[in-house]
Each structure stands twice: as structure tokens, then as C-alpha cells.
Amino acid sequence: MTNKILDTIMTISLTIVIIILSSLAILNTKYIYYYDIVQYDIVNSTTLSIDEIKENYNYTINFINNNSIKEFDPPSLDSSPSGSQHFADVRNVFNYCKYTTAILIAVTITLAVMRRPRKLNFLKYSAYSIIGFSILLVTTFILSFDKIFVVFHKLAFNNDNWILDPVTDPIIEILPQEFFMDCAIGILALSLTFSLITLTILRLTKNKS
Image 1 (tube, rainbow, N blue to C red):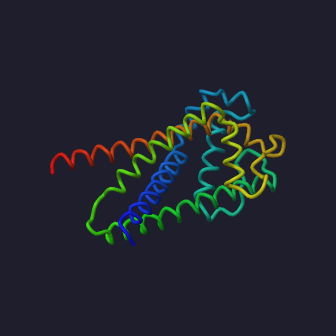
Image 2: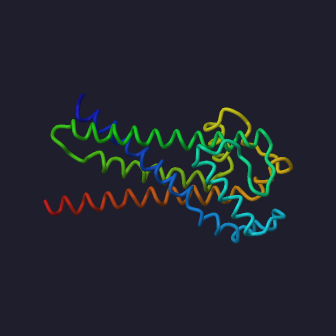
Image 3: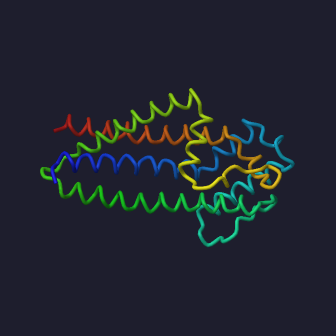
């Protein structure tokens, strides 16, 4: 296997790892949602109090990260069978991302050890890839986040359970689309931060040598 192929595989692997880790970090950061409760006046979209909204959101995040919870049953909100299945599907996506990350990290480390001479070109390529990817996504968000939101769900899920009815699944009333846009922006920002730190370290290392 040539070094060019090794660098390409490592670049793709590391890029995916950074994006997934950034996604998991942001989606598990409750403070973004807590801020958005006020920012988007979520209280007026439901009969729940702020504390109840937080309680149901915290339960949802805990459910997604905890495979031992069998049924999706929010503390003070009803959930239809299809709605409950959707959140189980979300948990499956999270699990898949975690397993994929572990595998890709192992692949990247293994290939980095195999490469002769050992160079860290893939770190630079990955950083630039993320910067380019982020610019593309930000442009797309500005043009139409709605379409990206729909396309993502169609790609991530093989059913229509993600289309929640507020009558049978009122949790959708406390999860506005704007919140997911803020999460997407946070994911891109964190990914870019990793990239810029990587490029800075590489430049400092190069200057010292």
C-alpha cells in the first residue's frame, strides 16, 4: 500500500472521527438547549414549566446514551409507539457513531504506524478537509437549513417515524428546529477548533525543526 493511499485513508478516517466526536460532544451538552429554552421562548410552545422542560430533555439525552433503558417514556409527556421507536432509532445512530469512531481511531493509528517514513501529512489534510466541509455546510445552512434537516433525517433513518405529531408526541413542541440548527453550528465550530489547533501545532512543530 503506497503512502498516498495510506494518507488518503487516514485523512478520511480522522475527518470522520473529528466530526463524530464533535457531534457527540455538542449533542450531549445540555447548556445549548437550556439557553435555547429562553432564546426561542419554548415555554410558550407547551404547557410545561421550564423545570419540566429540562427534566424531559435530560431524560431524552439519558435515554439516547443508556442502552439499559428499554422504553422511551418521558416523565411528563406522552409518546406514541412510532415516536418511541424514533428515539430508539436515534440511540442506534449514536451507538453506530461510537462504534465507528472506535474502529476508525484504531485504523488511523495502525496506518500511521505502518507508514514509512512516518509523516503527519494526514493531520494537515484532515484539518483542511474539515475547514472546506464546514464552509460548504455553512453556505448550505444559509441557503436552506430546512432542506438539509429533511435530507439528514431521510439518510439517517429508514422510516418516517422522525415526523412526529405534536398531538401524540408533544415532545416535538419542546425541540424546535432552531435548536438543531444551533447544534449543527456548534458541531461545525468545534470541528473547526480542532482543525485550527491541529494546524497551529503542526506549524509550530515545523518551525522548531
